[in-house]
Image 1 (cartoon, rainbow, N blue to C red):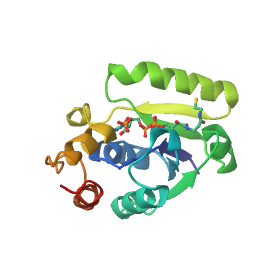
Image 2: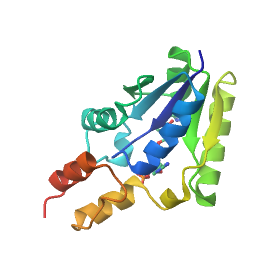
Image 3: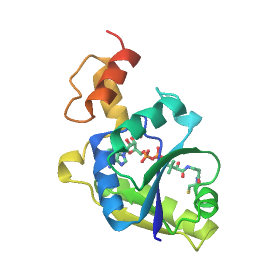
Image 4: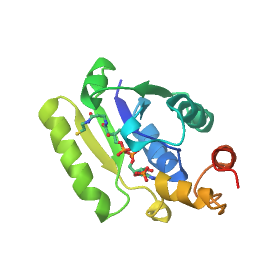
Length: 159
Ligand code: COA
């Protein structure tokens, strides 16, 4: 059984993340979405809120699970007996960060491979921070996030 980890902060999940997940779900027998607590990023949503929003939007995939993780990603991946980590590359600007992270992860644990997929180009400028910024000022985020995430953003950033 081929198993991959799709890690991220998912604060909140966007259609861009769901695009990457759809590709991972086609390639692997099981995908674990691993939500980093990442307090350093000062997330707008708690880890439990992020899990609930992700779960609600991946329910159609029977072979996808959602968990919170702490500590090193590769240690988590080994514990889960995963074969690979999957990440999305939206644009050239993602490359350097992702390249360094993949090499560091390979240094830490050579048995875990990192794979990259390219989300649809319509999501090349989508990021959770930009979506939050638009929502904070009452802008329309419906092209970037599912309806329940848009509702959660409205609650998080009341006008
Ligand atoms: N669509 C939309 N947005 C996307 C995206 C896509 N396909 N792919 C990435 N993004 C955005 C995210 O929304 C996020 O935006 P933001 O910074 O504005 O919030 C940004 O790209 C990157 O976020 P994400 O993919 O969630 O990664 P991250 O940098 O927040 O987290 C971890 C990366 C969790 C994988 C990494 O920090 C980690 O592994 N941490 C554990 C500790 C560890 O092992 N460290 C050693 C690593 S070398």
